[in-house]
Image 1 (cartoon, rainbow, N blue to C red):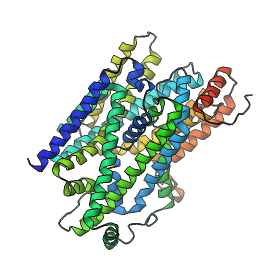
Image 2 (tube, rainbow, N blue to C red):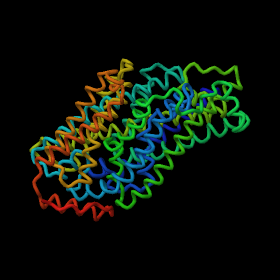
Image 3 (cartoon, one colour):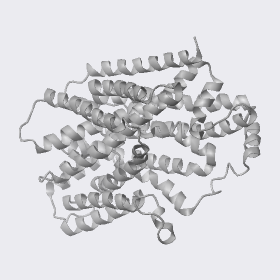
Image 4 (cartoon, rainbow, N blue to C red):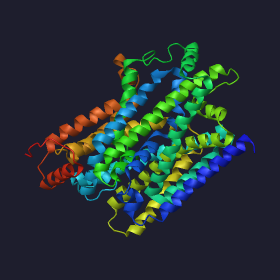
Length: 503
């Protein structure tokens, strides 16, 4: 069998495994709570690896290694920001959110939690939140489909549209039928594939170049400053990279995993597993780049035209074609895990947060599950139509959408969990302010001291926080039900909070 044949075989085995998990999950999904949140029955390991896999996407295996390969460790600041942000998210948000979402009328989505937490009867907060999720995640899903098409085009020479449809069909199938359980357990497998690949590639590559000392020598031959994290860095650039970590608090497809844990106390185990996975993955991605520089330097016949392909090229050079096929499948796993998570959250926004909020006629759970599946299909078709003509601006929107979600929802989630005095008016105004500031800031550049070159999530997050706190203080009125639920969430999550008087 040819090398390409082996690699395609590995891809087919991977795809069939994903469909099998979807079929298994289908038979365990009976109601809307199962479909959208897995019946709140995720173990810490599944929740942790699912959150990590749905977070990182192809950036982890291609974007980060490519950036470090091209520019050096100065490109690692974003990885530092993301790792710290993920740790704080698990530590601060996960246990309280798991407890509070169940206490607040068993909320199964972020918008429904905000509505129930604040006892908002106007439905404006829930509908606005759902609309933001629907719009941004449709573009997010579309960008994933573009990435899938580009992956098959670059790896096997397939037609872009064929690759896109192939990836989209398998991802949509297991998401549509299996719901949250399928997404979570496929993410578990995909997360294991990703971290295994990012350990195996640099390890074997290190042996191939002659060990750590020889690797360092070869890299210094190419660029003596490649190991520096400050060479070429600017203050604004470092701050912007670290600010990516703020985005975690407001990413619905990540924090929904916290809501699905079996208990708030299991967030501790989830944090340890999740951050260990992230550290191994990020360090593996950086080492892949460094080993790649040394390997190419010691093998002049190997040329790298696109730095983002260094992981793929090393995998093909170091492993048997069948194993290399599974290395390629790890990239596909990174893309598909993110697309499936975003698809499900978009579906929940359409059904749980928009349709149910505006409909006057209640339906059975089975009807809502069917509507959820139809929502997955509908959003997928819209996203596929957007991705049909490959458009780089869609991929560029990923960073913008991360900032939009982080600045819109992040401060409100933190205040909702840790501050009794948050009000509906404060939450709504803060959320809108964060989104608007991100939108305006992203369209500007330079300015005094290059201030507008700061990543837009930072000004958006701070503006949201200031508006939400200020307006909440101005509109706050004591509510015994909110106070009781807040105190109950503190007790159930086991986290201490300052017992401020309710005036």
